[in-house]
Length: 416
Image (tube, rainbow, N blue to C red; front, top):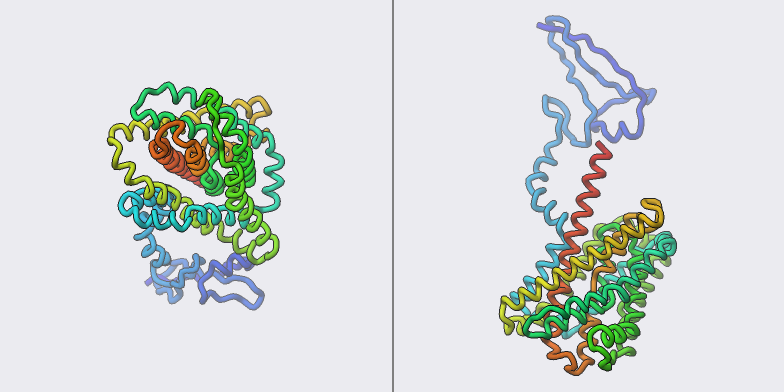
């Protein structure tokens, strides 16, 4: 029988060690941790078990010191991890599917202006999560913001000239996408996606608000010069301006005031960033749900192959917008100092790429309603734009998801 030589190893105790030790770990009167390790040297049997420091598992003794609870959690991890990693794309696709399966709920939601409520909610959350230092970061990135505004309102509308060269029946599909390319950026999608991507959300907010307010004045000029060749186009300026102030500026300012007025609320929001990001994603998913529900009956009247061509045109348009803005941002980054310039910072570049590459549907619908059939049947003009609007949000949600996975992998390598 083998005996044991008992050795006492003394090491200073720290708060971190105390947290990692089991509850029954004993300490000496001097505050040192005692670790008992048996070493076999003879025929007598050891009567002491080794005590090991481990994570808080509540189990000591025997040959198994690994906690058993995590093993039970891992069984559900693959599905829950998939949902967590792809929450936004799944929410958007779920909204589209729900609108196709049961449009009555979406039409009811539209009747009670739920889409405006969702935009209001996204900008309230934007104000709640907007830190003062982020406003300073947006001010420092003003050259990026100026490029974004120029791209949204001046450069990308020229893609309408290329779109009009496509021959497709009904011609309203082509004209509708050309009008869509002249619109300002999305009211909520770009900001929500920028927040999810960890980009400069204050910069995204500034580009969104300013481009939509300026767009009220610039869009009629763009349509008349690029599409209508001088045909007079009127836009409901007063109604659009009032709507933008109520759904963008007011909730944004309200959220910021609430954040600055209640310190506890600010801490709660900062400690639950992931929760508020998912709430924004749910609000964002209401847009495709309502739009698909409203357009389902019209969609069923169009031949599937023609509508698929229109969807393909929407995909190509968004790819061209992403490629154009990504190339322009990269060139400006190289010219202004590379990675040290405001264009080289990832958070600024991501915000500009997402916001400047999207086009808004609600403003387009408001413009078409005021045209009085000058460019064709209003429903056919809007229908391909609904598809293009959904496509750009879904495509960009996958792009954001790719960025997040890439960042997580990079952080994992740094830790390792």
